Length: 202
Image (cartoon, rainbow, N blue to C red; front, side, top):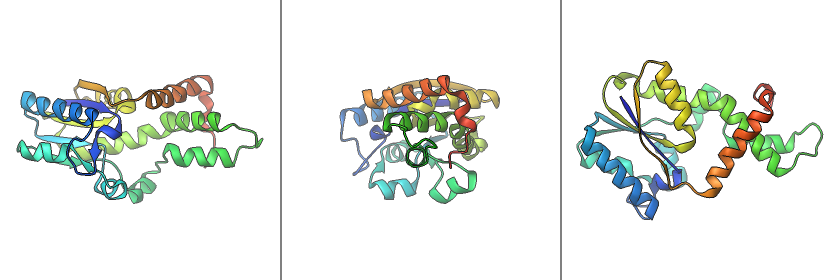
């Protein structure tokens, strides 16, 4: 069974690798309690060593897992791997959509909403399948998976479709109004413009 913890990425890592904010303390507490309750074989997370270096922010979950005698595994794709699997993120999409609008009149707000819509509708599945392959060997055991809150529903559906049981431990840790707005705005745009996922954006 995969035990899911959804959060804002700001709650997931800190410069020291130890909790430094209220949201990070909450996440650390939830993770410790989950480990104690289910004794998973693995704590996996949507993060990478490359991201740690680029962001200068260390995983909070990794030392907690290690201190509990639990294996830890980063599951997110590196820049090279993202190119290999054909994944594009919201920032790159936003820039491309802004600069290459056929009518040259798209607003920044609409470009951002469209970028999120395309990412959710086309690229989330690519990224989430990559995560699943990273834990495929242990899906029959108890695993804690830490991921961005926006991926909770779609990743849980992917796992269920693959015959893997899931349980939501906690979600929304550290989410801000801005985090929520971006996701909801992207989902709204996707509902209103479902064909955007088929456009040749890049």
